[in-house]
Amino acid sequence: MNADPSTLSAPDVKAQILAQALPYIRKFHGKTMVIKYGGNAMTDPALQAAFAEDVVLLKLVGINPVVVHGGGPQIEAALARLGKQGHFIQGMRVTDAETMEVVEWVLAGEVQQDIVGLINQAGGKAVGLTGRDGGLIRARKLRMVDQKDPAIEHDVGLVGDIEQIDPGVVKALQDDQFIPVVSPIGFGAHNESYNINADVVAARLAMVLQAEKLLMLTNIPGVLDQNGQLLPELTPARIDELVRDGTISGGMIPKISGALDAARSGVNAVHIIDGRLPHSMLLEVLTDQAFGTMICSEPVNEFSASEQVAKTCPI
Image (cartoon, rainbow, N blue to C red):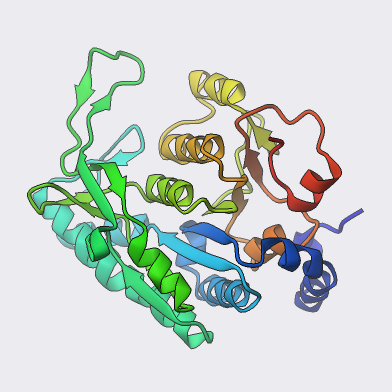
């Protein structure tokens, strides 16, 4: 039986990872993993350093990490300094022209460069990208239909709906052993900028890159039911039930929706894991310990031996 990682000391965690890592390194060598980086892991200095180290280690053992970052708390702080208050509809930030300017300089300037610097400091070679670079993310204005009344459409301003992802610049960086760090900003037909939910960008990028895994770091252990109990796996039918009863709401909706789309489109495993736990990403990828909630397009009744080793959804 595996020990609860939250009760382990730092040396114990390192020993556990080293003891169990080899079969996972072999299986995932040369594969791409898209990591949605957000929550407390982005604001706590110790967690920031641990995340950067984990990303560099994945690269050194032959896995190709691609980081897509959020920045909600940093955007909120910047807006507050300007006397503006953020407003959300169905988990999406309402983005007027002034807010879009703030989003761009916070995400592409402040947050992205901090992440790039931390990864480089840890021994990696990171390069920051936005959707403009290499034509990576082409978008249009998002038409948001009300979840309860389809006749109602919400205007959320310069929030983008992805039209196309061209992964050429990401693949070129990977081939040269760089680690791409992507800010979720797209561009439109008239060169306008769009704010795009980072969970949605991570999911779509994972699909286009045919990633082995999509890892979403959050501030919770995974998806919880109404009693606060962790749901280790979710399927489309169960997700629909949780949305209807309000268990999944707000910012969790685009996260779950994107994860399910990725699972349906061939990403072998989608995991929502607790970014507050140091090295949780490494423990998920390189050990037998299963973390958080796994999103599958079909029910998981029984894992085969190979699926148990890979922690993937049955095909």
